[in-house]
Image 1 (spheres, chains in turn purple, cyan):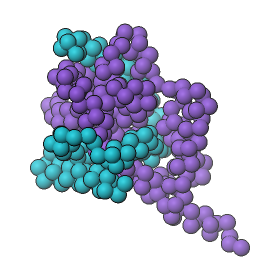
Image 2 (cartoon, one colour; image 1 turned 60 degrees about the vertical axis):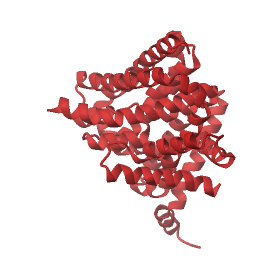
Image 3 (spheres, helix red, strand yellow; image 1 turned 90 degrees about the vertical axis):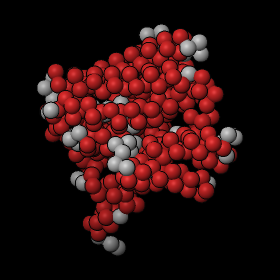
Image 4 (cartoon, one colour; image 1 turned 135 degrees about the horizontal axis):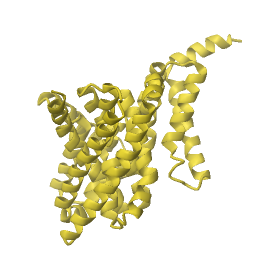
Length: 239
Length: 115
């Protein structure tokens, strides 16, 4: 029989263990989410991340070693972003009629989302690289990481911040929208997609097809608008 | 399934190449999404069944795809310990303000447009 240490070395080196752990954590997180009656705060992304982060720390596994396996899941973010064109096209008739209103709200809302994050972080004396990691908070993860890198942030902190922002928006966004009496499914989708990107869109898609399409549209438009505008504005203010 | 995945990857690849060739600040997958959207527009028909099914299964599990990057939180524990207050307030208040403002603005603009 092999030494336990030898088995551990194999598991730590091969991508199989990290990939399997990621999928198992996700399935467990989905089950917990269902146990909680699908409550928004029991977000499966948050649960899976907590399980895996706790597991890495407890087992003393380096994040880079974990990511070597988990990158096969991470890679699918790219094609999934491209695939957002499909729900968007399906709702084309609705989107086309309200395109001007949608673009205006997403661009203004997205700019407001970035500025609000930067202003709060600056006011509370956050480190510059933390502020730069917060700025693209409302944009979908791969895009936000690219923007953060450009303006001197930490891409992996940005990933975490983006996900926490997404969870916040997915969990509490519907309450805020009820409070503000935003009942139009299109407006609700636009708001959630602008501020809570893919995580919000995933939730919007599961609630209402129209909200999901507009959320996907807002996510795509905001990624475009923020990717174009934020690096320029940042350079302007940093001078 | 394979042709649909290939179509998605081709769009993404073209997007990545365009982003680099023209030094665009927009990430490749976002340009890929625009390209696929334009391709569907030009076709002027329903989304091909296979592409639709593949897109639905990818987007139905969108949350899973954020998990590996999210676990990166373990790299920044000291920074999080130092700046947890501005971080959590900016995430919480910033996101909720943005949702409230965008939602109201969108509803107002959509009504004005008579939509």
